[in-house]
Amino acid sequence: RWLWVAYLRRKSDAFGAFKIWLAMVERETGQKLAVLRADNGGEYLSDEFTTFCRERGIQLQTTSARTPEQNGISERQNRSVFDRTRTILIDSGLPMNLWGEASNYIVYTKNRCASAALDGLSPFQVRYGKAPDVSFLHRFGCRAFVYVDKPDRKKLDPRAEEGVFVGYADTQKAYRVYLPSTRKL
Image (cartoon, rainbow, N blue to C red):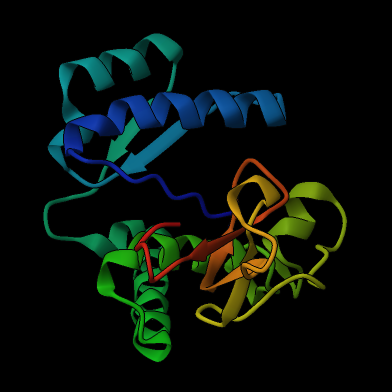
């Protein structure tokens, strides 16, 4: 029940994103992917994608046309993530162009919340064998301050700039903060 999210500019970028995801998951687990279920989207049915799966011994299963219920868990997770994304964006009053930050936040927190499907464990507990540390979690859209490094400020300038908390960094132990004054993260 672990969720990953990848943002693509074009559907044709799906194959490259899939290869990166597959390498990460296979390295982490030591297991090989046996079956991939996807809808009938062209991004999964390209010659390049199907050849790659066939050469790797991955059975590519596709759902029947207009039957998302055949891929129910995935479709339900998508709906849940985007319903929550919409809700926190509206609640925070932040611009809709921050939908990617909001959905990252939802996926991050969802992976650390207990799930009935996992007998009350979180996906994090199942994946890593220990309870997640949630002591540093914050509400999306809360007030945050970003330290202004000394070379960039004068003696009496403020030491921090006010921003809005929007999530957690993927590759660092750091927060992501939106600065409305510059419209930057």
